[in-house]
Amino acid sequence: MRVTPRVWIGLAIYVGYVIVIYVVGQLGGVPFTEIGKSAEFTWMGAVLPLVVAAVLLAITTSLLGWWRPALFERKRSHHKWPIFVPAIMLVVAVLNLFNTDWSKFDASFILSLIALGVFVGFCEELMSRGLLLTAFRSRLPEVWVWLLTSLLFGAMHLVNAANGSPFMSALAQAGLAAMSGTAFYIVRRVTGSLVWAMALHGIWDVGAFSVGFAPAGPVWGVLATPFIGILAVAVVYWVIKGADEKPVASTPAEPANARA
View 1 (cartoon, rainbow, N blue to C red):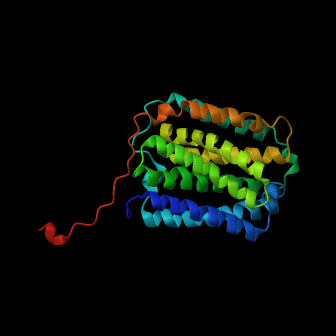
View 2 (tube, rainbow, N blue to C red):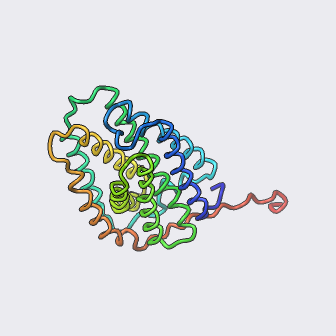
View 3 (cartoon, rainbow, N blue to C red):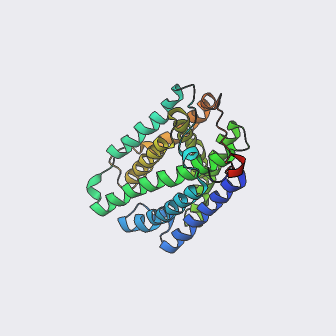
């Protein structure tokens, strides 16, 4: 790593990310409540801010040299069975896709949802359970790493209130995100890779937006999200137990005369 992880670096990245999403979203001129209602609104209100954030996150991660600790665990969880919670989440996401009336979407709308899934999975996971997690692991026990990254992941959804969402709705979304985000943390710990959490996160959001716009059956995500969040929090102890993921500190290059 080029830069030794520090808690303040993670928090600075978090604040910067929220500011970028808010400012670019404001420039796009689409209220949060209108995202997912048309291709244009989805591109401008969600995809554009995420693309800008993705570029900045990739540059930041490269400059810090944090790609490996952000994306991969040194040692996976000893307990694999808690993966059943993210598995339920995947089943619900797929059910949402099947319960969507896709005849109401044109090609541009479908592409906007796919782009939304790709970039929301990449950005939100890399920022919260990637860079922020790496920074917190430099000082904190793993239980605090899980708790704080989950709470901050939920809290960043409050920015939707500043972008047109009713405050109570944004507050409820933040609470559910904090709990359900634990499922993504479980995926990282059990599989050893953040990439699978990115994929699940993307599929989940695509299903939620598609069935929200054109439901052809029960909206399973609305019914299942609190249940999934509670289950995730209930079993997360077993993937935290025994975790030792302190990042390896960067070391300055050894002077040439010291090797002589």
